Length: 255
Image (cartoon, rainbow, N blue to C red; front, side, top):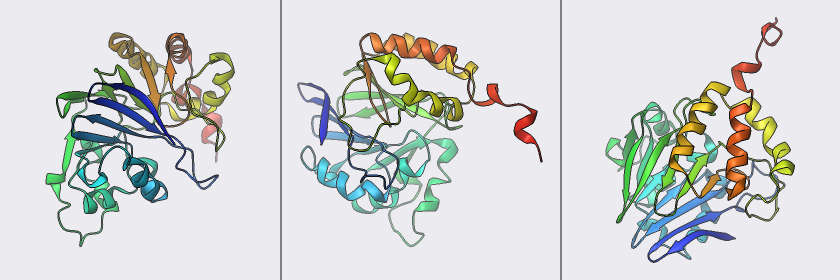
């Protein structure tokens, strides 16, 4: 089922939240940004969701006419089906320059039209990515799960697609919608963030950057999105969270 996050004029942002079958894999969201006849798919996932995503996209765009595949990082639930995107579309794959030589390892060597010209590799500071008459800004999220990690900010919709930052673990089949009660939502995020985020120092740098962006929505790749007062509550929670290397000590490295 598609969830329209934003629609105004010829600009639209859509989330697909229920394409993973039951407990076959970790729940993951895929996204579509459309501007006129141009479009980008964000974090499209692996073979598990490729066919369902193609069917879901067809209500909005011809999948083989997608212009861009935006990848926040290198995990299978992000780029696992990149070979199919390169084979069946003319889309350009956008990812960190750190992963530009790793992503081709999931692309068969015999495949034609899958070389370096099909990739747009982002420097660490990010950059601007045109989608029709709109521009998507790749913003750094390094060491917040991956060493070469980006969020994608749509300034027209004022949505930050935040990748794994803000991810929550929700049951398969749970309804998709904005977080209503932040306090009860925290347990769905806390364990993941403590383990997968690099350190509190990096979280505070990211929070400062996001406050300057001032998004109206923060939409992670797993679980539920934030808007309104939940955004401030989420950022306040993140900047106080100990995680990653903050929690490690000698006991974690015993033989």
